[in-house]
Image (cartoon, rainbow over all chains, first blue to last red; front, side, top):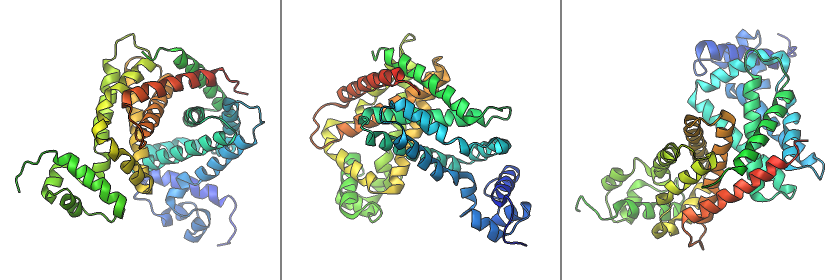
Length: 195
Length: 195
């Protein structure tokens, strides 16, 4: 088999998610993923460190994109505008031509407590990165933490809506809409009495 | 040794936190904790399932208190008023007569990645409980999620401020102050442009 394979990463991802769904995550071996994709085990390991990375491999790049977008936002951009920039920067993580894989990924993670914990921890780390990037812009600590939580909430809500089977809208559109919804809710919460 | 020991739980907690700080969490055995407290290993296991429970044992009760306070708030209470009630309900988790243990606990968890992850997961679960309790009151999903994140942020910020060595103020006072601060920040964030 030739060393170079077109779209090997994507073929492996698709094969892995199908197998996780059919047999369960724990019962699926890397050899089986490679075989289903028509590739070798060593090709798998050139693309992913292990089968868990098929699910979470994009998260580190995502965290970098989030941080970079906030640091590169115009000096006068509000915290909310920075969140908007961060959400637009992660558009590439949600490719329409692989949209059919999204519900599979969601189902695998939801069915497996350890993977679900891994996802919660990844989001907590993303919140820490957003908080730090906002603080570096001179945003006060409390605002930075609250804005980071709004950003993560916007991201996870938008990702969840984008991933529904019937969705055809690009991630950036959904994310902008969700962020605006959160902005309205923040105003309403702020206006409530703390009684 | 008599089966009943006055304040055994508190003595074991103090001994454990001291030893975790002196020798590290991993290097401390339950036998040593019991010996330092002047108690037996079996007394330890009547109070805690394992040494990790010394650090996190109060969290399940805390989650129950949070949920109950939100469910029992007056029907017309705003989401923010519900958060205020939840924060007041967990006052007993922060006893002034054991305040000196708080910085020890923080240091142990901060120094140990696995314990730190455990704490992040406990907070994510607390957020899920608050979200669900607010939804049960008829609060819309987006507001419930955002309010829950504000509540967890208020809780963790207040817990951190309460736990500083020099603090002498009760938790409820600090928590009310932090929640009010978050309310102001939420209003400001809501007023910002999403650019």
